[in-house]
Amino acid sequence: MIGDRVEIVVDAGGTTRSWDVEATRAGRRVEVAHGRGVVEVSEVTRGGTPVRTARFMSSRVLALVEHPAAATVRQADDEPPVLPLPRPA
Image 1: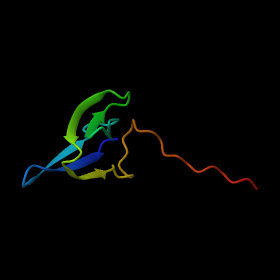
Image 2: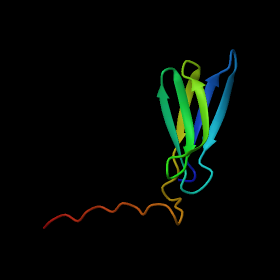
Image 3: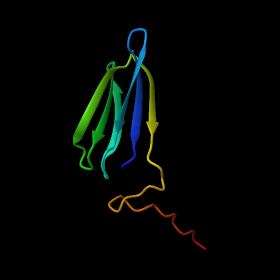
Image 4: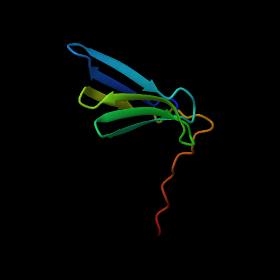
């Protein structure tokens, strides 16, 4: 969903650097994966094809903050909201 954003803060040897990976178009999302000493943040399409990927050594990552899109920001091609099921009488 447009508006998804992940902020990554990394130790760069005495100083810190930060990066933002953001879903730039409607229908795209940001996914975070980690394993084997690597943190990977990717912007992916609806079909799961990665558009942009950032990789960091997990021992250097100080903070990884996910900023989800606001619930009120909806695009025409986003999924409809989930409605609760009616309760039986």
